[in-house]
Length: 489
Image (cartoon, helix red, strand yellow):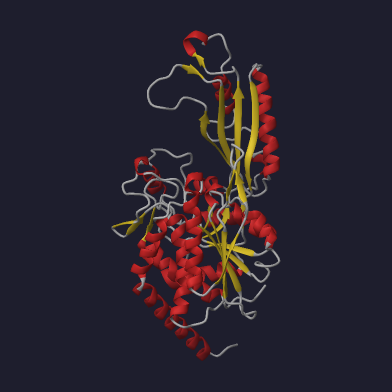
């Protein structure tokens, strides 16, 4: 047993450690905000090919920032993207960087992305989306929370150690991409290619591309997957006048609406055979975890602007948000959706819907279940129209062990910075790269968010609060200190 003096000295060291680093972060917050402003100004919308030069510029800026800090930086070419017209366009290069290579230290790899969702002022933004605007301590701008501020917070973490002339307690690697919002094109192949090189000495992977559930800090241990489908119904060779031809043809839109109505009941029950049966039952331990999470249903309803939710108690609501599958119909391509009226029978319509899948569900199995079911439902309609069902995304879910030392270190870091115990949460959304990292590298992963529960990711008026940005940087500093004390796997 170590003497009491050891623990007193260790505790005192931790307090001094936190004081000097946190003081440094506080004194440089204006510089951090300005850097975020510079990054948000780059319209790195990966979904718009016309904005591809901005995506390339964003990757160059990221590499230059890391190079200026003395990191061993590479811009990795991951190939080209084929467009619908058959042309190709270069994918943004992936930035990798390394700080420290001491074999006696742990090595962590931080993943992030610097591309963003589309944003226009006319979409309903209160401020220019690519001009970071500080309003009452909230930093509004597209990509501020998803994911530019968290990436910068990790970079500031390394900078803080360097500025105070103290060695990093662990070796730190970065892998930062520019196509996450459109499916991380080319990244999976790069990870496979660098499994035995860049990732060979990595002990743990950290992802901060998520957010808290409430005002209480959180650690994330699971995400749902996503199977995204197109259901196309084609009839006449061209659009028809509904007055001239209505009543004489079997309309593709009617067929499409009919089969979509068989996917899910009004109460939210998925009607596709085999989907619900694959889900693992909610254990007593999970129920207890959900019961203890800080979550206010009335605030949740107010935030999203609804008067009623699918479930009325916290556990049911969180469970169906995180660990049960859902069906969502996203839209119908080919249907008239502009302002005014247009009396037309669409010749071809394409429904877009997705199933968020959970552990125990396999994308390949879900694909067969959905296609077989829809073809059987369509056949019963005896329609002369043609149905084509395709799955364009098959991203797997991810689930971590909350008892892993990575999470114990995370709890200690949160306690150090925020003086509270973190909530252990899951994400209803999908971060496919987590499962790729796990499957390819075999490394342990933790998701450590610093984004707020009300940041508006992918929505109008996305923001990162100054508090979360600055305190999040402190959290990452404290976390590296905690990870340094873990035994190497």
